[in-house]
Amino acid sequence: MENLLITAQERSPHVDFNFATGLLTIAGESYPDDASKVFGPIFEALDSYLAEVQPLPIRLEIELVYFNSSSAKALMNMFKRLDQAAIAGQKIDVYWRFAAEDETMREFGEDFSEDLSALAFHLVETDGK
Amino acid sequence: MTSESKSKGFNLFEAEDQVLARAKDLAARVEQVPAGLQDDILALVESYNLVLKEQRRLVRLSDRQQSQVAKLNKELATRTAQAEDALAKLKAVQESLVQAEKLASLGALVGGVAHEINTPVGIALSCASHLSDTTRHLKTLYEADDVGIEDFEAFLTQATDATTLVVDNCKRAAQLIGSFKQVAVDRVSAERRLFNLEKTIDETVTSLSPQIKGAGHRVEVRCPSDIMIDGYPGVLSQILGNFIMNSLIHGFDGCARQGVIAIKVDRVSLNSIILTYDDNGKGIPDANLSRVFDPFFTTKMGQGGSGLGLNIVYNLVTGPLGGTIAVTSAEDQGTQFKISFPPVAPI
Image (cartoon, rainbow over all chains, first blue to last red; front, side, top):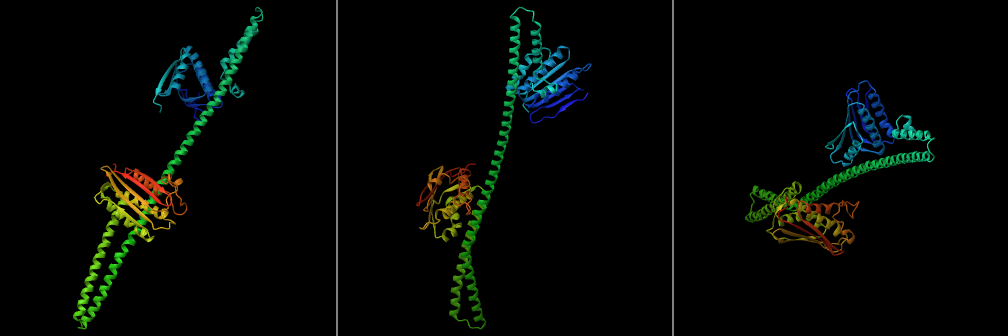
């Protein structure tokens, strides 16, 4: 299966999904005109990855400094989708990275993690660099 | 969701749409229930539908606003960077103009040196050549064995006068060179040293005397002879030079009376010296008075004025001198600058 690699644009994040290691990284800013352009390919890739016979544990690294309402909704959709997979037995770890001084991003992380049951959701403070 | 999103198989509100579809389906299936219940369920489905529509609209709206905010922030960052860049360039230009201005005043100094030294050297030269003529004349007489006692006495008198004049004038030239050298070195090196205030003022005034006297003006200096300053003589000399050039170019320009510049120094306390610079020129109009220290402010735009002379003075007084400066002026009566500074310059 092909890895997913989308370089960051002015209004969309860097996306890297390595199927061989199960590592999915989303980093940067996300406020595209059309959220489907950013998240459509990610959902497609996640679906085909989870459809494999014995997928490796997923490690999702998210380090966003800014995102809009559509992106927030899409992220929640993605977490719910992954939570279902986790309930079904798939090992999934989400690392929500945010700059130590960025209270808003910390609160978003906490807010997202509240409605998840089987997914391991980790809040990680960074030094902002 | 937009049709574009759906065509890509991605629907932000997929889960909600599914709930809505199931609810509609449920409403359709409860036809047999008691009257009123179906209406209630239909009303519930409709209100959920409206809430969902509202949510989509809000998400679209806030997306648009967030994108505008991001765009404005980027615009702001660009503008800020441009403004900072322009400011840095302006500072660089100002710095180079200040350097050019310093060199220009040094040029005036060199002109003054040449003019001032010309006189003693000229006198020494004519005395020496006169002595040479007289000696040749005596030699001719001597070779003809025709030297009378009066001839020899006359020669001795002339030779004594000439050599005295040559020595005196060469001494004067050497002295002038010495003081100019000090002024020039101080201006260029900006080195800190212990110096006599009166001497530095005198040397500076002398170096500009061709310009002053040439235009028929004069300078009076009143300074206690024992004030020693631990600081930058070149800075002081530059300040006075800029004042004097300003009086000559602006104050006395088109002024009928003879220009008089008075430089007065008072030791007001152990830590404070006040230097007052006065001219009796035509003064500065009130409207311009508050702007004279601003960079690039000049009334001689395009006529050789850079608008930096007094700005440099201001920076030198508040910087290396560690002092303050004030200006007062009365139109058609003159301008006064008052500089207050400590005898020991700040480190």
